Length: 163
Image (tube, rainbow, N blue to C red):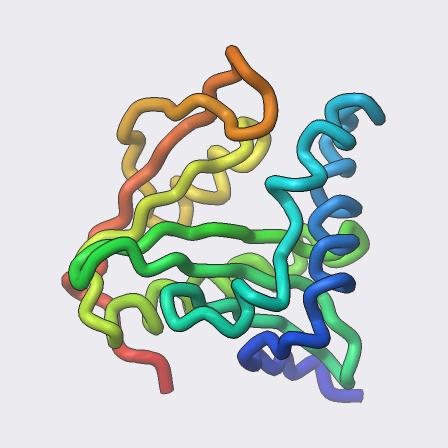
């Protein structure tokens, strides 16, 4: 059986599934139900975002099963932000996230971005560092006032365009 991972552009009809996947993935870190509910809106991906040219969402699949997704928001001609990065809990640590961040960096570089900004979950610091992220301070959470999240920057100057 092939273990080949396919990464494709998200479709508008993926929106509800991606929202639910984001909630499952975030919950892995042991957050309370109250915390998760406070994050629901921020973790949601809308059909409009999936159709908006300022965003690019990528879905990782194996044999038609969605294993994870990520999103890019193009902020300027030279900068973009990782708007989302979530992997199905059973597939965390299996390379799905690495494949997605690698593709996201390549796509952003191919679009002309020189910098990828990442606001990461505190539990994902090592993942983003391994992906080339350099700590760049903190940013207040859009869901939980008074909670500050780590920021990273990745230089895309030496990234190869996506194949």
